[in-house]
Image (cartoon, rainbow, N blue to C red):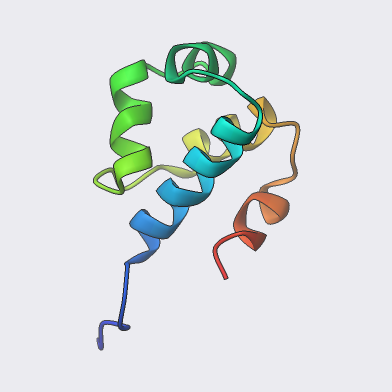
Length: 76
């Protein structure tokens, strides 16, 4: 499998989550509580070091009141 140039999907997803969270004015603690995930797990997501499960992707989308597809639109 060929790696695409630039940030990988985990980093792109993390950047999108962080951008959205900051645009809403939420701290990591606030957002993690809304999403039902641990703050350090969220930190890993935002840094692009965590390979996020589908269950947690859904939790993130729901916490933002987004469809999963809307959450991924910011990655392209």
